[in-house]
Image (tube, rainbow, N blue to C red; front, side):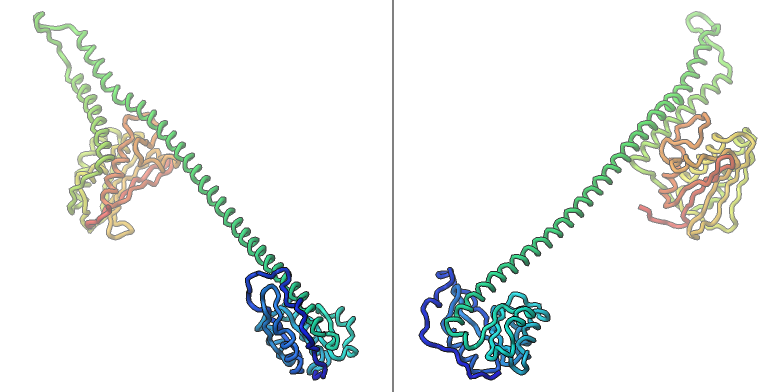
Length: 452
């Protein structure tokens, strides 16, 4: 509101230019003061009165608004304003009060100091204004002399400075709390990850210890079986030789002779053959572990191989009163592989059928096209005792046997079968049910493959 009241300039009191306990401090950015009044002369007089004012080594920078609407806009663009000298009556009777309410509630600026100045105090009672609005002082323009203006300015800036420092401290504290929360979260995550890693490592070590214990147990059993299986043929031959030495001799004393029946020689040869076969199997297993299996692959027909198997194994099946059938799907392509090694796979599977089953069962050998047309599926099926489901997962491992019946053998035949089949890029497996027989199957490629 236009008002004829003018600030009394008078003589400037030197005390107001002294810095508030900050004399000698390095000067910073000017304190920002907003003048809100529709009387231009009030703006001019205030600036003249405060021209040389400094506080803590900082001068003043004025921002002028000549209406309530302009003041609302300027406070948004100057949120670092330290003090607002705000006229109450401008374009409306309560324009200044609306500005004060806008600053606190809409602009959310709680630290800027607001001093109301009015030329008509009767129209805006001081008590109701102080109670209802968040202002910091209420002055009439008549009482706001130059000296009072300086005093009010110093107290307001000191209050603003302290509130700003408090706000900055609160912001720093909030930032520290946020960083602390993040640190705690990261720490919890690191602890959780480390705990999980340690638990996994512990589980792994526990599993390794258990596997090592199993391996040691298996090794003890294997060494016992190996000792037993290798000792039997030697013991048998020693018994035979001992019996022969007790027989009466013929000829002169210088060259005594013992007559030996052919059956005794046959048993001795069979014992030697068994022992030699076991030793060769052990040597071969070691070579497979170190060097792998060397293949001489070429295309050939499995039909010819099955005919040879039928002829060679017929006496063994007949001796145990087993029936064997060989079936091959017509028109099959040639298989690409090592003939001798694949023969050994069939031979080991057929030998196991005879070794681990009672007499009188039926055996079938089949060759068909696999689900993958680039492979053939070979199977040896029997109607024998079957295999316990708990033994199947380890059946193709080294030194494992698929029967609890007492039999000769080292438990390496199926392991060798697996190595041969996998060297051909094939797969080997078993379908079996205890008491219902077994099917050992494997696949072979019909063309060259690289499975390295």
